[in-house]
Amino acid sequence: MASGPKLYSVPRKLDLASLFVFTTCYGLLFALMNLVQADALFFAIVAGFFTCVGVSQAILFKGNAPRLASCLTGAAYYVGIFLVSRITYGMPPSRIGNWSFIVFVLLVGAAVGYVSGACIGGVFLVADALRKRLRSYRKSDNEDAADV
Image (cartoon, rainbow, N blue to C red):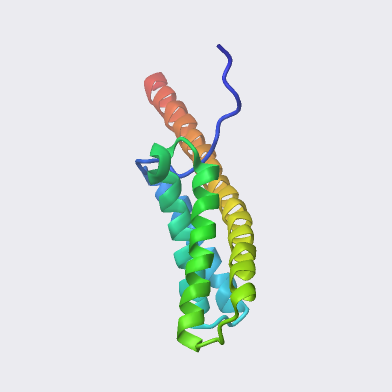
């Protein structure tokens, strides 16, 4: 039975290479937000979003459907942000506008969740490449030590 291409997502167990790449990517994300002089609230929302998507990839559906988990998390996160900002800033209610805008936010949130999930998968693709590279160095070091 042939299997498809490997699907990269957040693993249920993290190793050192994954943590190294993961931390580096968060550092780059924060540096980029600092470069554009983003607000502290924006920092928190973006970091919280990526963290929620990553955690949902590992936990929801036992890690077997990371794309679906990313979409669901993105939609829920954006609707939550919309509702919290609506309550915080006291926007006037409108019956038709509320529901149509929530549907719009659901769709946009799902799309952004999917894209961010793909980016997170790319991070773990890099971690996998780093892990393979480190293993090849260890093997060559062991072979060199055996030759001496």
